Length: 427
Image (cartoon, rainbow, N blue to C red; front, side, top):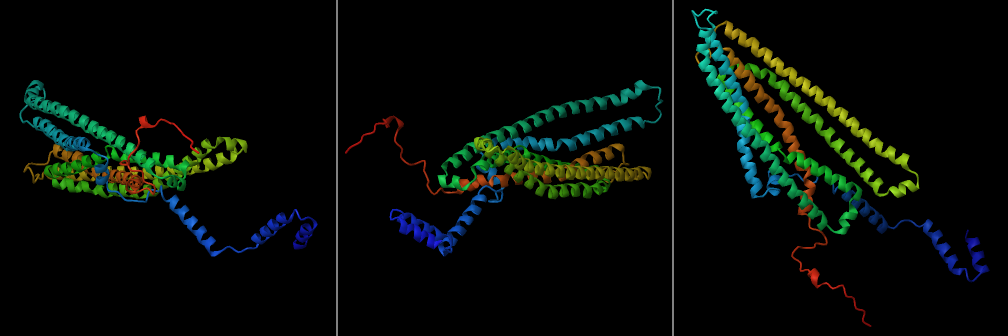
């Protein structure tokens, strides 16, 4: 090859410059990379890895209290405090309903045990039980009106406060994104960015809604349910605890198994969304190369993965719910068998000093089962709030990040009215 180059150079003086360029290219092919070039390539890979980590869900752990404090003003705090008061009332309602139903059943059973009263004298029986029935009807009506007010304001205040909080957060999030320098946008995938932010906002909105109120509601149900159960009969309450391992175990397995599946499904969905946005933005290029089949396969592969994750979630959910319901009815069965033994032996209730009545059994069954359900349900709600806090880590990452080119709001800016748009060229 060198002989050919020398021959061409000697044949024409005008081609000398071209010959030198050919020699230089030939030498570049066999030139070993310098140590500086290797360092630059490694730095480039590190920057690429850093850019890929800029929008993941494991950057910063945020507590739910800090999240609520950051996105809430004084008015939102007032709404949450008022909603908490109504939530406590709703949380105690199930236990109070169980107490009322149990007392109502006891009233009817007491009336049926009156000695010396013939069955044919229906009017006499009605005269005996009618005052008690009228009293219980008034109590139910008053209780129902109170529950209507508490449930209405609980749902309205939590939803309205969450709406105001997310409105403020969306404005702040967009403001933080606009403050970043251009280099930061170059490091991040612009096509996946919108999908990731939207997914984060949706997850935060789910966690910021009434989930915190649901936790307060369940704590109130747990405390009030166990209080009413132990007051009615501590023996029956402890017997009903036989369903506790099934319920708590099913919820624990549900939370552990679903966590990894949910995260994988969300990340796969974000990748599919990024591909879709990339195709729509560059549809002219895709159409020019007639590359529809390849892109559809690439997008369809990720959609199929999301579907497989959804099938796993459905299977885990179905098994967990089945085990939980089996545990509940197993606890019902054991409690009723034990209650039949107590009634047959005419044992007295240590709390009331009277024999066990059907009303005592109803009080325990309704109140304690609601409390056990609340114990099992509190975990998923905590997990949802935790996912919302993790999703908000990107927001707080931008909130705490100081841009390399920082445009402060305090910088002096010329008034738009003073800008005339006049350009002068002076020589």
